[in-house]
Length: 82
Image (cartoon, rainbow, N blue to C red):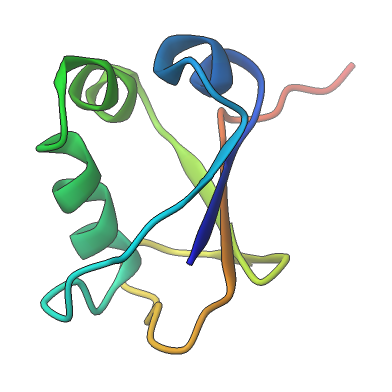
């Protein structure tokens, strides 16, 4: 699965994208975030900071959304407008 990180998340993790083998136990977006947070301190800090938004295959998704069969998951901080 391809994971893509935008803006401040990219800066904190130190990469814009990566390919990962997600464990079968990670069935939802929330499961994926929990798994990523256990990888190392950079991920833990990134995903515990504030609200993190996500898109599964380019469609906005909530934490309970299934990631089964997803090709790409993008993470980004909340957007502001003005």
